[in-house]
Amino acid sequence: MDTASMGAPDDTPTAPRALATEAVHAGRDDLARQGLHAPPIDLSTTYPSYDSRAEAARIDAFAATGAEPDGPPVYGRLGNPTVARFETALARLEGTEAAVAFASGMAALSAVLLVRASMGLRHVVAVRPLYGCSDHLLTAGLLGSEVTWTDPAGIMEALRPDTGLVMVESPANPTLAEVDLMAVAHACGSVPLLVDNTFATPVLQRPAGQGARLVLHSATKYLGGHGDVLAGVVACDEELAGRLRQVRFATGGVLHPLAGYLLLRGLSTLPVRVRAASANAAELVRRLAADPRIARVHYPRIGGAMVSFEVHGDPHEVIAGVRLITPAVSLGSVDTLIQHPASISHRIVDADDRRDAGVNDRLLRMSVGLEDVEDLWSDLNAALGERSVRGAGHCANGRGEPAAAR
Ligand SMILES: *Cc1c(COP(=O)(O)O)cnc(C)c1O
Image 1 (cartoon, protein in one colour):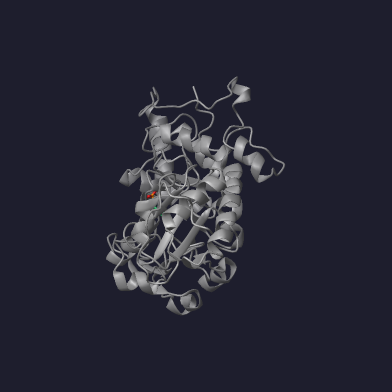
Image 2 (cartoon, rainbow, N blue to C red; image 1 turned 90 degrees about the vertical axis):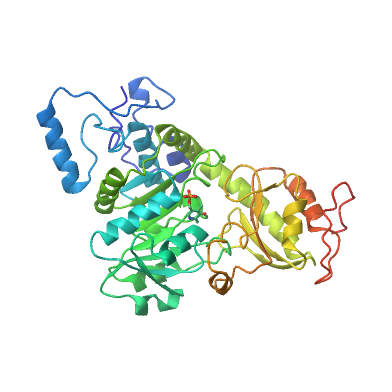
């Protein structure tokens, strides 16, 4: 039975290990001792216990602190050993005490907002752009929060006595705008800073080391990495993790154990995937930046595998024209995806707010994968069409035609 991994594995290394090593070993340190190589998947929803007095004490302890119960698990909504392996691993990669996994990135953000609201701290200060649904969740006040939008320089001034959270994304979805995390963390004072680190991943940026108290991921993206798991996770200190586990227990946005397994497996190749896809992205950026059909390329200083660009022609024609690249929302998979944020990922944001945040109607967002870069370029080049004149409006998909000269 795989109960030893609930909470910290008992073979947690004492010497610091490099990120690439943590990626393949964290959350698995007890396996060899158990005579295992691949981590077991525990699908139990409940666990037998003949000692209900002890169960009562364990449940009381969870209600008090949210710490994972010692000993065997109690019930699937309270914690799962396979999911705990992923949480342990992600916390080690992000350099935090703990991590708490959820059914999706949005479930993770919801839990953070509920934790703060339950403490009477409903006000959120946030910097645009954020992922479209995060923007919507805050703007619509679905969970009773009230948001003040500001730029990074305005954060300190926007804080109120009831501010429970400051939220930024860096690089941001979809413009790849970057925020100086250290400066922002400083401006937050004692208010917890949440950084959505979905785009950078811990391979490129570890926000906790720069003052973020909460690091959020849509694990659906790079952490899973293969487009087949929906998940979210928050890396943070043990105190906030306890509150997040209590909210997860009470609201039920738990991660399925099979998803926990796939995420742990995904983490083992995360550094390799991110570096290889980033090299592809950097090459595509170089070519796009020199291309007269492109009005502007967005690529963050820290690099990464996300590229956004504005076309002179019709962005919808580019989406219609790709064949190797998949026209789809989401990102972070092994294959390359492209989408039109104003139509899809950020459609739910009010059009004026969207444009103010830099998400203009000619912007395309591309998640670069692991294909050969020449094949990617040839597909993109054809999809961009042959016309390079501003406003020409003609963006033939060019399929089957020789690639345009550039
Ligand atoms: C996709 C995404 C989310 C939401 O995550 P889900 O797993 O789809 O719920 C949050 N933040 C960013 C930056 C995202 O890209």
